[in-house]
Image (cartoon, rainbow, N blue to C red):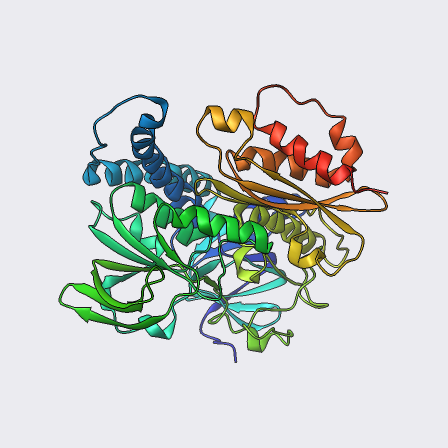
Length: 467
């Protein structure tokens, strides 16, 4: 029921959330109308800039610098052990993080005040939002409220000793020890970086999951590679977690000797996924069909929720939590909200995901999980252990699998771990989006000596299996 004491504003489009999806949505809507409003109830600055992509890469860059000192002896260069100054490391992380956030805030600042409102928003019905000081009636609405770290019940009694990735980047110095739960993208990146910066870590997972990988052979290779560097148990048997003074005591079965052990850690970092921020939006008042997590069912090509004038984009839709996907989805949702009811499919690019661990992990196109039941799929494989350029740099760890259609030769996807995977993945994603065949990809130039020659070896392996 509407609160009649509040003033009512009529707009063409209302956007809830001014983050990585909301800002592109705002720009797209303005191509259709100037009668719109951007509503933000939290902190400006985007997840990526504040607590995601950018600060994590700053921490990883520091870790790589420290690790390069340790690795120098492999080239016959004797160095003293790297001395990590935790305060200086975290000082740079916070300073550069604030700089990136500043760029986002500057962009928001340049949006005329009439277009944005600082307030929580809640649906009264499918075209009406209640804010703290007014009612917004909109012909179309875009939900771009992002996501938050998911917290499992097993961590509920750990108090301030429990942290999520958001908390790491506010540290003033590095702790002595951290237990990482969840070897997914965030857990792998932060856990390995902390290890290389001298923090004692143990990493615990479940069901042998590792990063985004679905190809069992690649996943097993990656697991063994990481286990050579730091403690990783992807199928951990954790007996208990409890506060022990200003630390957390963890009882677990050691993967290496199967003995039950107890260890204390300064912090428990939970990286067990993220939850879409949709619970307090009043979606039950919209008449939309919701999935088991309370997220509206939507069309991934148009971002439209059912047949309504509501659109959802970015982490809020619980689909692909990556910045470039959020930006694309925001632009599609904003364009269709602005042109409603004359909506149209937007540009969805080839799937591309990179984990900035070392060696890096990447996935392009269709995953093995999507392809393994198909009879016409062939797999090309290459190891980076003997690859020339990789051995020259002492970066020769990695395994690549390429997937193709046996009959047409069409490149379908890839999962791999390897040196500079971020760059190989971009080559592959461009080929996938252009719908190139394996023979066409082999016609492209390959310099010598480069890591990309490892990709060529995998392409040749696939090509030999084509009809």
